Image (cartoon, rainbow, N blue to C red; front, side):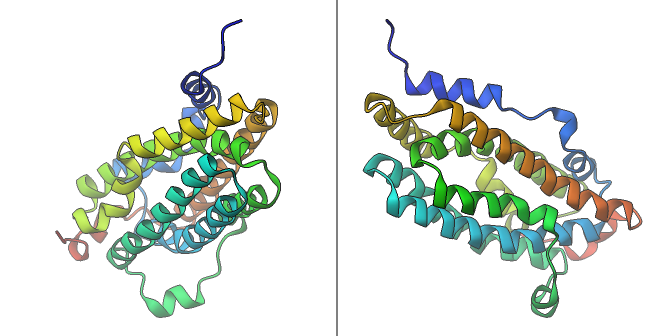
Length: 236
């Protein structure tokens, strides 16, 4: 019997859990410059809640995981800390400052994703969560690449303002290697439940879609004045 390889398993999970392209109607609007400035501001404000929540969840997963999985989650937590620093420039370019951020009430549909990541940190077997999160991050990275393109092309955002999205859009071979090592270790130990991992991954993709759908409501509720943000967004 041929042994299952972690690389193959992760690749299959990414393909099986890939979202329907039509499931995210907002990213194409940003990519084409058709989303209003208010939508970009809401995206920044929601991410100010998501990033620290995910970082805490990844730290908790690392604390209770086997060494290989712990290395993966520790890297994720470090990445979230880096992302939080880069988010400030995007928020400022969108006109989001301290007072507005302090009084902002997040949308439940946007915060369902980090709430579920927190649930995984408490309840999921860490190797199963590695598979689910790896599949989800593949889709998220693609979204970020398209958003960064739209911000530069249609909204006049410079590199500093796009750095948050560039971070997630860039290939991450070191993280891929850590995920592979974690999954291979779980396979060798008979500690991976792919049925649960697929369920977790499917739910993550659903909550991801809810995030974008909740933000899409800001497009429907405001005029489409996207490129008008250009004058105040330039930076390097």
